[in-house]
Image 1 (spheres, rainbow, N blue to C red):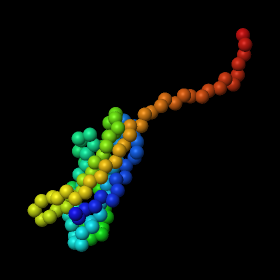
Image 2 (cartoon, rainbow, N blue to C red):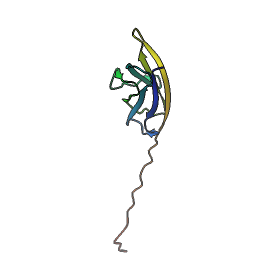
Image 3 (cartoon, rainbow, N blue to C red):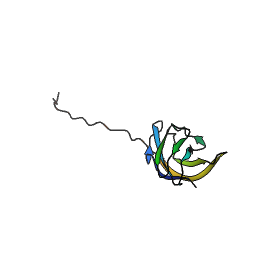
Image 4 (cartoon, one colour):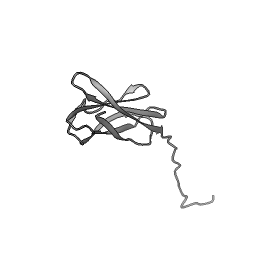
Length: 119
């Protein structure tokens, strides 16, 4: 294993339609430079990340940022880290994070009658 997922940073809830940012922190835990990649899904839908892969020095941690529009249900985000062994990508680590659908409650307006005359 070369690419350790140390954290998935994402909101614990989001309203339907809102953009959800997913930051996956990955550390190169090997003793040599490594090409590292991250893939992710929610509800079988691929999450696009800003980088296809990066070259990491030993001990270096980077953040792969992805985003998606929150659907109208709770989701589980799954992220995988990969390292290049010279001929193919090897899956190294996986982590999940649950994101709940935030239900909007209508706001009730407050008003006051300041002047009232009985007719």
